[in-house]
Length: 306
Image (cartoon, rainbow, N blue to C red; front, side, top):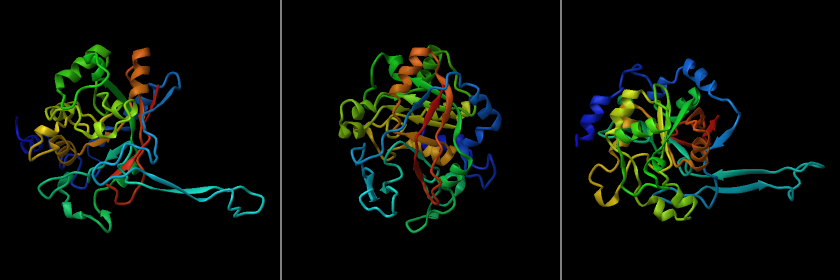
């Protein structure tokens, strides 16, 4: 296997959209492509791909915990005469639920996307040069394409450590009668989220995962995909017994070298069922980030409009 650093150099988008670019492959989403995606809406059906936000969520894993939701005003407080008022707040890691990984989330060799120094991310100020705020300013909307790799294999979920290769993405395209093109948001179903949704097992969900192989980086680059999302926790394949010194090589290539935003922890069960029923695997996709100053990731509520 070619070292990920060599792949990253070959697929690098540094400077492609200027030395000050902070959007990466989202530049592939043009106004014309957004307008074309909007024309895919035929029935007005809306399918939500986001997990619920709450204490019984899919965390903890590593340094992340589940969201904590608290009320600071309720009807019992009666802050105003003759008016019932409720107010609340939430404490949560920005990547503790369905999320975007921003372009400052992963780097290596002291550099982030587009040669931004890694030390520009600080504990005091967050990511001071390249942050999720810039992606939020643009917004994320366009043509979404679901490739159901579980259905292709005739299973309800792929096994831990199952590596999805480019040929399998193309086999899913052929089976479904759809093709991923420039500016698209690719959504890959592995069925892995069922460990949480069906089995109610958080440990099983975080114990490795099926996902895209390192070879998929070149495929995504050639297709000029804008972003890639999945129902696993890291998009790429992870097999703990086989993890070496480079545990997340595809993250490094996609985020740091190509400038690709990754969508993780998606619930694709309802969408996959609907697409199989009407055999329509493309749709208007929307998933605007929170405009967090200095953020390296963001919770999202991704929607498919058909």
